[in-house]
Image (cartoon, rainbow, N blue to C red; front, side, top):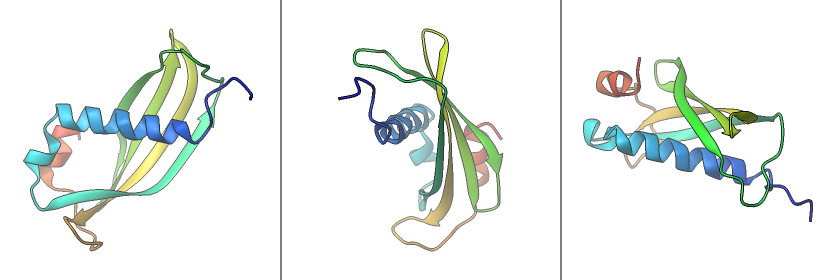
Length: 112
């Protein structure tokens, strides 16, 4: 045991942080019929989180495309940078794999 958080868990932490952020903005109610899926994820570590650390994660949209957008994440413990991540999401017609443009109301909610 390395006594640090396993690397794959950071993507789960990002997913939870993004879901909490979007739920707080009531995103799902604002865009019926539209959904989004993960296309690409990158993570870069500056340090490691360990057992019982409280990880704070800042979340924001860092890039807008027609049907896609990037969400940036910065994870820290007591102000010390632990990791950064960028996840590219692609908009789809809800319940399908057909790409769909990001609705204007979603852009507004997410700070476009």
